[in-house]
Length: 463
Image 1 (spheres, one colour):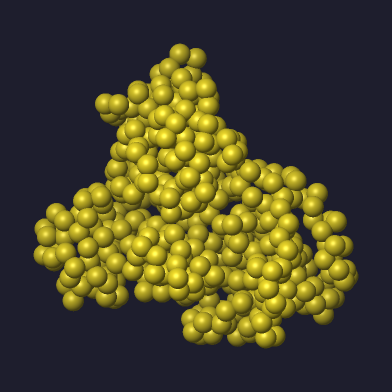
Image 2 (tube, rainbow, N blue to C red):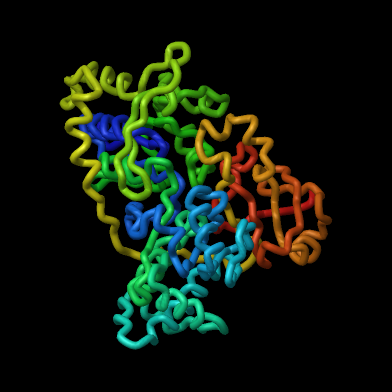
């Protein structure tokens, strides 16, 4: 009990489970609870907000800017809406750390290495700040924006957003997981203010908004998910989360292995989980339990169970209620889910404010820097086990993708060869979509769990 315990929750679980986990941790005297497992930069205490421009209205925009987004792989339904807008003549611009395969024509795209993404966006913001009646840039951003050099075409991007009756700026998963996501978020918010565009940040998990509103965030003096791994706890509650779900899987593996006690609530008992968990409690998945979620527009939604629970599995809320009752903690005296919902629903209607602050992150000055993106069909435990989706053409194996010039000049390797990447053997593929100095390796694969995280230098050599 106490601050030596930390709770790490997969961001797709229900609001009911999230609220009970929050009560459990408060009852144990620990403020350390978080669902933002796939985040590296916590400088601005990021809490994803409901879309300013609803998903239904995205297909009516006349201009859109995507930053750090492989939208087709991140939220396909949102991508479909923007695809419709593009077909209707919308101008869609993209700033990315690699060329992602959109299934519609972009008006213009700029690709820079991950370590150049903030400065390239700052150049765009500098152009916007020179518009008539543009508000003053905040002091924390001013020097970086002033030092940025605008490029040809930047003014066109800004004016297209400003002229449009309906425009949206979207911060994608690749940006939200970036080591300097706080900078990208602050710059885009200013750009949205100047141009009058809506600002929509894509949630990283299916129930990101709901869990934040249900209280699955650090309490006073509490540690966020990344700090719970870099300053390991003596005990962890791991809720429906696997090592693949963490932005820094290597740190997660170290922390869990060093803990005195790990209690894992899970629908699956894979080999890795068995290695780190001292106690495994089987729980149901979303299709098997009644649940409440909050969608990306901030709308509360109810889900009814559609399948029987297998074996000894029980709905997560029942397992948590029984545990809280056994420990004689307050807030666990109910017997029916409806009693909990009566207390929970008012919370789910209230947005949780995000914070301010900018990351102090030093990029490596040499070497190949890792770009880590989430595969479309590996973002949660259920998708990772779906064999049909694993065979889908959009599913790719774990591999190292880099520019052909880097492959030849730095490594002397040919396309298709095998390479040793920080102790892991992976195939290497040459692709001009990747900028120089970058090694693109998707996360959430079991083969990549022990690799350095997004933004770190990789040690790559011939096998």
